Image (cartoon, rainbow, N blue to C red):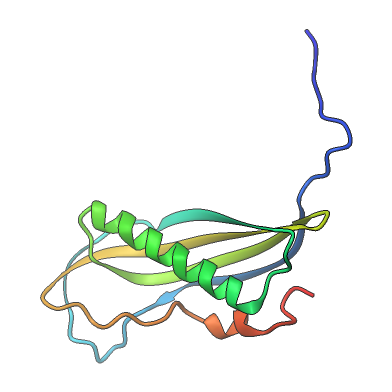
Length: 135
């Protein structure tokens, strides 16, 4: 048996990571008629290749917002219409001069009757707006 390995290929190195554990997205004052809630969180992992350009604070925010949108589309396919808890992990990778962002977005799907409350931004997005986040 022959083993093949790639020579001189760099691996992705972790430059930085921010993790926000799932937090409640509804207030105690919200009057919601929640009919069912899943037993476990749903999670999606999304990767964004930036090529050779250096990431900016807005790249991180857009990546998290896109990941949330994609996860929400997945829960709608499964018959739910809101996330009670939301959290995310953003990891920045570098290989040579190339950069990659990975976002893992997690939430607890639920189904409510009636009008859904207005969308709130993902939790703790201000953490990502700092330009020196992963410098």
